[in-house]
Amino acid sequence: MSKRDYYEILGVAKTATDKELKKSYKRLAMKCHPDRNPDDAGAVEKFKELQEAYDILGDSQKRGAYDQYGHAGVDQSRGGAGGGQDFGDMFGDVFGDIFGGGGGGRQRQRGPARGADLRYNMELTLEEAVKGVSKDIQVPSLQSCDSCHGTGAKKGTSANTCGTCHGQGQVQMRQGFFAVQQACPTCRGKGKIIKDPCRTCYGEGRYEKTKTLAVKIPAGVDTGDRIRLGGEGEAGETGGGKGDLYVQVHVKDHAIFERDGNNLYCEVPITFANAALGGDIEVPTLDGKVKLKVSSETQSGRMFRLRGKGVKSVRSHSTGDLICKVVVETPVKLTEHQRKLLKEFDEAVNGSSKEHKPKAQGFFDGVKNFFDDLAK
View 1 (cartoon, rainbow, N blue to C red):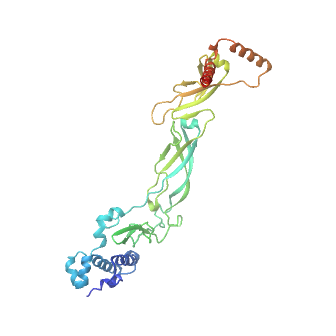
View 2: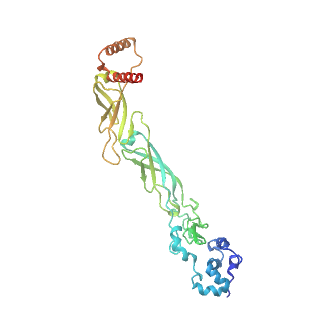
View 3: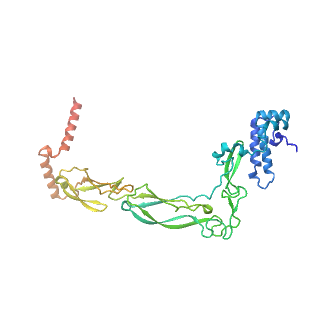
């Protein structure tokens, strides 16, 4: 049986440029590919004929031999290189790993896809984060159908292997030297065809429902930490494995304490008398009140460290500290008698030695020296 003219197969004139040959080949390859014509018994042979034509005319030396001697000029020179050889076999080793083909352009068998991971945002008080807590949460997600056990098929039936992709879930579209994978249009990437779907999940193998989970929060967590609950995410399609659930922690602001790592900070107001004379004051901790000894002549803003009164690390056995900043509070709503006493005290301090107020004296001495320097 005589072969058709290669130019006729590609639908171009003998004067066609390489660019025109390639363009026509791409267009016809997309149109005639067997995966796009599953009902055409001769689609494979037509596609091979198209490949053979481009294999000859796309090569300048082979094209020259064909133009001069016809099919006789290329059958011998080709040495069987293009005699019906599958395009995927020729270039699969080069491009297979890139497009997921591998092994001469053949698709890898894919199992059911794993379900999606889920995220749950959990707000905790500082006390809950520091000491740990157990909380019940409700999570809506896609779970495996109880009626069909995730298969999507009606009880007593089963899904059939897709005839287009042969159960692989993907097909290859080849363009020139390149092959591009895409989801099978027949089974939508599942590799199976369900003729009699489950009436509960309508063939999806899963449906949305809300489940209640008990989540144990370890002591010492902080904002940004997350807890992984394996297998508590969404169920995969058609029996695929479950994803994971990630509980994302956010610790709410506290009325008294600020947290920095494993340390806690707080401001403690004290009276002028406490600051000047010293003495014991009560300060709050997460475990209750403790006494703090304030030394005499304490200035406002001084820091006191209470070791081991902070947060126990979730990642080690170390415990942070509580840093207390004392702030001298100015009295308000004074009575006339109190005002009189303060004025007498102020006059007594201002009229005595400078050593009673070293910071103020140092500041004003610095200001005086600054203006004296400007006047020079």
